[in-house]
Amino acid sequence: MSKVSIHKINENVPSQSENLLEILNLKTYYPVKGGFFKRTVGNVKAVDNISFDIKKGETLGLVGESGCGKSTAGRTILRLLKPTDGHIRFDGKDITKVSGKSLREIRKDMQMVFQDPYASLNPMQMIGDIIAEPIYNFSKKSKAELKIEVMDLLDKVGLPQDAYYKYAHEFSGGQRQRIGIARSLALRPKLIIADEPVSALDVSVQSQVLNLLKDLQKEFELTFLFIAHDLSVVKHMSDRIGVMYLGNMVEIADKDSLYAEPLHPYTQALISAIPSPDPRVKKERIILKGDVPSPINPPSGCPFHPRCSMAMEECSRSKPVLKEVKPSHRVACHLY
Ligand code: SF4
Image (cartoon, helix red, strand yellow):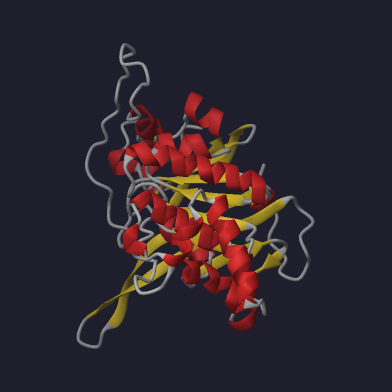
């Protein structure tokens, strides 16, 4: 069983574990304002009490439909959003409440690759300057040293050296994502949170960028939190996979175990929707009824019960906890 799920994180004791990241009971709620005085009248429970860990050098995939809280979880871990409750332990330190200079230092080691690299690249800045900026902000390197480093990073992500002098609009979507990846690597981080990094790219380019990320992971000894809605992409990238539904982690397992024997009815539906690589093999697709409920007013008990074909009386009354039912395979469902 995961270490974080059985031991409360002690904020003052350095972790000896092989985990780079430990998330315990993390919640991120957004207040909903209403009425004349704009008082808080409720909360959007975007992330609602999730726990997981990621070992050094591992890739954990996080999947689920749009709005399930996976991106919010990634941004909260990076401390771009304030956690409402719970703990984030990174590289042996509790970083849930760090701020100011300490947070800035931690951010060197945790970087994000965004879905839309174009939106995150300044159109007025030369690519060389965009990639050099984080190094410049954190070191006292000379211009000549910075240039050598940027040229090396361009090479590592498969871009020609003259990309240094160009601007974002001169590149294709796949090339822009390579620029975003080069920038995220500039400070030699330990953890990369990749949020839908290929979903905006043509299918023909997606596998090139995914393979690049895999190669860089080996070369830079990176740990990945890989967020995506496409289960085929996540399968290609991940060692383990967590499935989120309405802010909750409903299943987490080794990749092979999850795809061979998904236990949660929601995971079963997601996996049934993956097209078979062999068109002669017919798969029965599980169609989910209804839409994802609002995270402002989530259903009682199991958050999936209004859509679950296996729901029992108990499911609307009590919320199932995530528990280990097979080695390295945990599920939150009353059927187990
Ligand atoms: Fe379905 Fe009940 Fe399991 Fe929820 S707890 S997934 S409603 S069977």
